[in-house]
Image (cartoon, rainbow, N blue to C red; front, top):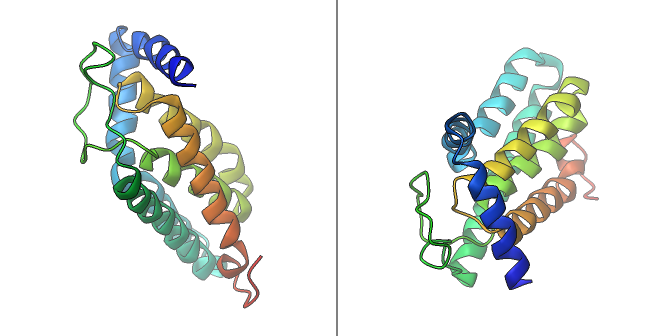
Length: 173
């Protein structure tokens, strides 16, 4: 797994040598910092869809909770970010030194599950944007593929576990 992780990271990191790809990856990384893009999307959904405002706000809260969960896991696992072992400088600065799981992937997957359940537009727009954000973290050289996969799984699981609450039900499923 270690070797595959490094080979995939190297291949994706090489994509960042194209200045347009690097700029897009940097922009996605910046907007995804601390789940900002996804939290803003939830607030926008709440502002536009007044009938389900509460559900949108709870979906945003689930996205934030997933992000916080990933930060907790990082403190326990403490996997260093790619760097010296890859021979390539990252294209962005990071808020922390630890890489597992990717918090960007966690919040992106949580938003995909939560917002996709609330809106047909969300179900069409969020998944490709979330996937691009996940890939961007490898292109900029700050996460291994296993970090991104684990983060996406954690985010999807968190949102799925909170879906009954998000929809206003007292039952959890």
